[in-house]
Length: 393
Image 1 (cartoon, rainbow, N blue to C red):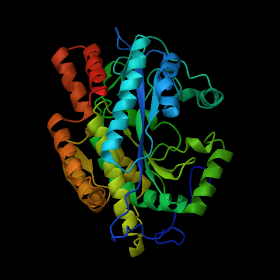
Image 2: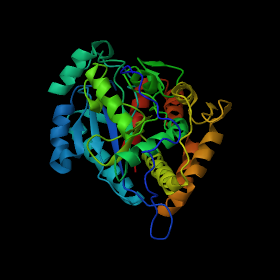
Image 3: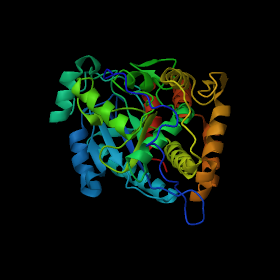
């Protein structure tokens, strides 16, 4: 086995079936959920990214502590909610984090913007954040580190799990649903000051990094074997660089989903988080049925994700289960139905229906960015609208 060819888990292999996750009433367990959002800092006048993360983080950390952190480039900031079981609390946390960091950004003469890629390109290459790990990454993967087109911002959702076996069970079973989820949250149509023709250009840019893509089917033993091989071979610098779309967290008992763009519309972020938690709860509640994970190839999943990145939620989609092209709306509706038992157990079903209806009325983030450009005729005004929407409740 090479470092880039992990041992694929045979369908129904032992060691992958956690005990059923059922509540005292026999329904799915409501797990905790948390969200990490990456944001851009942009100049108030030009809309271009600026390397001011240091002073903004220092200012915001007086109120937020370690819930605000640096990211790879100095024009980026990451915020982290605390784990919660309550959707209302999650919304409140997300809004407070955004509002606090936006205030700190204004004090440093810049704006906080949620977009998967910069709308206006930087006027000069943005330096990498000055930490030992990021400096090593820049040296090791120099061809990917340009300080311009490689600047991307994602949204990462953590759903609480009992252990690594449970996280890998979920990662194996959730794979076919992630392209539909990605299509909902596309928010990066522009790169280098141009319309890329994609709804999520971030997906293509980030996809150049090793392992950024669908996860292979793995059990705990083969996960350890694969992770060690990837690092030992130099394909990855460390295990934190395992960028599969669904992976066990290396530092907390969660499964981490890394598939969607960051979104200015807080409702979209909340919708993604609640759908993922509901889907995980539904899958875990059925674990005792002993169903093997769908045996869908990474190649087909990659094609489905590329289709989602191209067309978003209103166009055509590749159904990972069949390989057929279908309306993206049909796959999204199927995703909501699949997550239904978990959504009902958490009391989130009505909220998800409301959020999805609102998204379909307003359009995805990519749709709204393009609409803003059509209205104003200048990318600078797209940035202004994104900055306003980022801090709107």
